[in-house]
Structures are given as C-alpha cells and as structure tokens.
Image 1 (cartoon, helix red, strand yellow):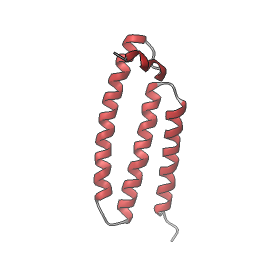
Image 2 (spheres, rainbow, N blue to C red):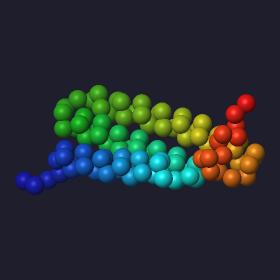
Image 3 (tube, rainbow, N blue to C red):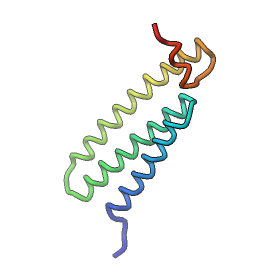
Image 4 (cartoon, rainbow, N blue to C red):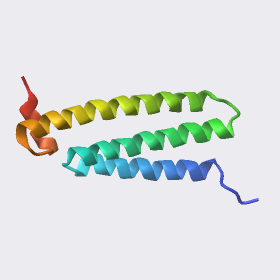
Length: 102
C-alpha cells in the first residue's frame, strides 16, 4: 500500500526547483544559468502533471504543454543572446551582458 503519492512528486519538484534556483543565483556562465532555468521549468511541470494525475483533471497537463512551449521560446532567445555576446566579447559570463546595451 506504500506506493508513490502526491507528496513524493511535490518533494521531488521542490528539490529540483531549489537546485535550479541555486544554479541561477550562483553560476556566472550563461549556458549553465539557462540549464538551471530549465530545471525550474521542469519542476513546475512535475507539479502540474502530478496534481493533474491525482485529481482527475487535464488542466495541469494542458498548462504543462504551455510551459514546455514557453521554455522552448526561452531557450531560442537565450541562445541568440549567448551567440551575440560571444561574438562581441568572446566570453559567456552573465556579467558581460551589460555590454549589449544600446
């Protein structure tokens, strides 16, 4: 009767979100910051799908699909910024983004 319940999914999601938050705050490499943001998006998706599964409702799964779409757009824009930064400075540190101001 043990099984995996909603609390297990929520705990996993909280741990992933905490790892992603620490990665965003601590890292200076833009690619690692983007990967940490993806961890945070995936933590939110786990929450949405888990709650949707334990409540017979598809709303969480639909929101999860929208979140995946937003994450794909975020990666495309983020990698474009990384390429522009690398062409100007030949470094991909977060501190170098102030160079892109007009």
